Amino acid sequence: MLDGEEGAVVAKCMKLLVKLGEIYGAERMVKIGSSQVAGVSYKSIGEPGLEFLRGFAEEGTKVRVPTYLNPAGMDLENWKDFGISENFAQKQKEIINAFKKMGVVITCSCTPYLLGNLPRYGEHLAWSESSAVVFANSVIGARTNREGGPSALAAAIVGRTANYGLHREENRKPSILIDIGGQLKTNADFGALGYWVGKTIKNRVPYLHGVEECTTDNLKSLGAAMAASGAIALYHIKDRTPEAKHYEDEIKNLETIEFFTEDLKESYDELSDCDDPDLIVIGCPHASLSEIEFLAKKLKDKKLKKSLWVCTSRCIKVWADEMDYTKIIEASGAKIVCDTCMVVSPLEELDFRCIGTNSGKAAKYLPGFCNKNVFFADIDDLVEKGLK
Ligand code: F3S
Image (cartoon, rainbow, N blue to C red; front, side, top):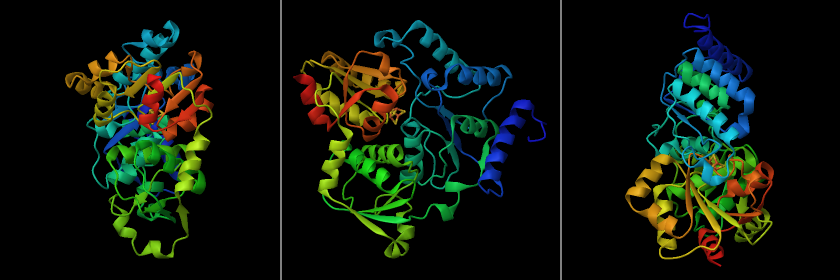
């Protein structure tokens, strides 16, 4: 492949991966089970990104492993309802078409593991969206570095990646123990913990002790926030994540820090800088069917006075439609937004001032990426605000 026997694009991709491997000390390549490609929104990649993808697609390049796509910059069907300009929509559609031509599945979601791209324990991957990466490594026990958009696409095209970083056992060991005092109840609580862990230990592998009950949705929120505030791509939780049991002896000698109820409260305060949201956004990472069901129960027979968007994948929305959750949610005045999210869409161009969210990751990113103030709260508080 490197010598060009399979064409110029394949050689270019292999060259990129070999170079990365050399930089990070890989001794060999490993085959991957799947890829997940970020860098899809026209807002993030702009004209140079579109040119690059167009070039690859026109060469007839195809991915050789299942490859799923990250959120785009708009709802691909209802973009007009969200104030997206014709020019932006046109460019975004061109990006999507280029990916489609290469055989990338147009899932437009950061939760590929909820949509049929479910890796197995120990499987090597090349995923790139930070919340998906930390979920795959920690909750599933698969192995992926946080790839950039181009390197994830290159890995999808050659079916391999370089064996460094979190692909190797020795880099998956925890280096700090975090003792959790107090009970965490909601996705927002887990997001606040994730935010605190990320900003406190930055880029290390934590071993969490004391998380009593947790759902898959809680872990999805936790990892997303850790990745956003501290670039963490792997965590272990005693009795909750699959690799934790391998490190029970090692953690006895680790540096330990504690997380108290006051830290939880402080994280909520740090993530908020307004308290009167004019737009509420749920679904970062993209909402699961159970989160949508929960919201439908809360909004049944109610009328919202504020805007509320639920960001999810089109695939999950099909199930929500089938179960009448969409009908209930939309009857309250809320909207289900597919294929995109509050951070990668051009929200800064819309006339909202204070954004309410229960996501630690969105709360961390919205001020910088979209120039908005944030009210970070649990879903019950957000709905209450929305009804006033
Ligand atoms: Fe997903 Fe967007 Fe949040 S990509 S993790 S919903 S910032």
